[in-house]
Length: 171
Ligand SMILES: [Zn+2]
Image (tube, rainbow, N blue to C red; front, side, top):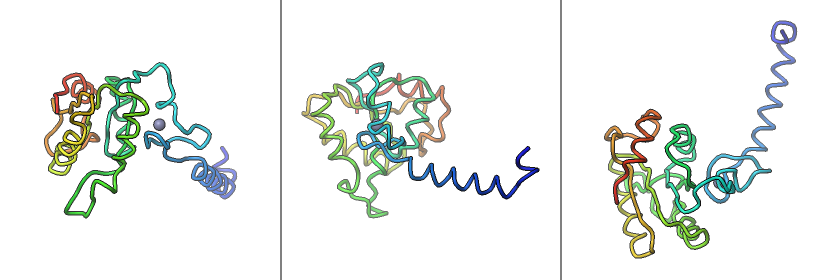
């Protein structure tokens, strides 16, 4: 037991590991999910096993593993890095919305699934995106079914989230 024998040595080792993780970890340049510098774009972006015609739009990179764990979705992802919030001074230009439009053209998505929070700001962001995507030849849908009102994805269990994806509604 290194911890018992040499607690200080273990501390130094942990500190070194954390430092190393900090320099290795980054946000995927394409989808925004958490990845490592040697895997950017990340596995989710480059995997040929995934459905390349669907993109699931989330607020935060931390929402991606939640959807992955639910097992109900196998397409690409796009993290906005927040949501529109006039109260907090977050305008659409501050989010990764242009990057989403660019990917739409480059990757040829057929369906955009909005997996945003079910509160006022999530709703506002979803309506903004639905309007923006109108007439661009993509089907836009939104998770609604079964998600607790006024909450984010983090509050939904895997089964609920998976059902919410399957039962998505046109936005
Ligand atoms: Zn990615």
